[in-house]
Image (tube, rainbow, N blue to C red; front, side, top):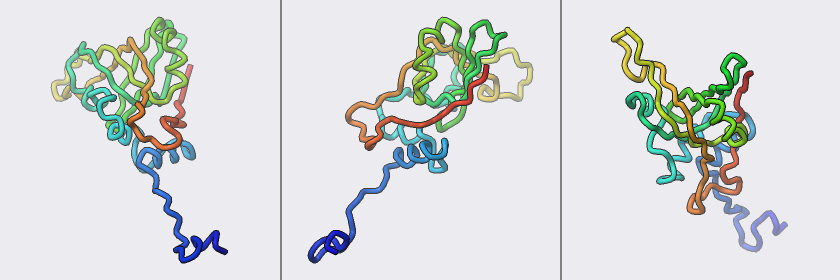
Length: 178
């Protein structure tokens, strides 16, 4: 049949392009909830140059206490314990590591829908570092580091980012506890 042979004199090869890096990771997340091909933020940093915060999780851990920071990533776990007086704790992940987030009740309420429904976020706040440790062998990155969040924004791509037909849709789920 001419349909499968590429027509008269055709080679039978249909010229489909392969998946881009983000599309491959995105497809894995849609199917399995994770990817062995890389982290979504790794691919997005290459695509969204100039739209991403300057620091990765690893870099934030080396910044000084009380420094204002902004970081992009995925929320992988949320906790809002009854003993926390309305405070929400979350684990935030990018391609370089994890950060602990603290959202006080008024901040959580203000950004709740976005924080709970958007997998890819940019959070801003103040870095809180455990400075009371007596162990001199611990470097800055080894000490407990939190971000006291005061703003949550969706990570969005502009029209210049060619993300493929699914855009920024990433089916990433978090583990939420009460």
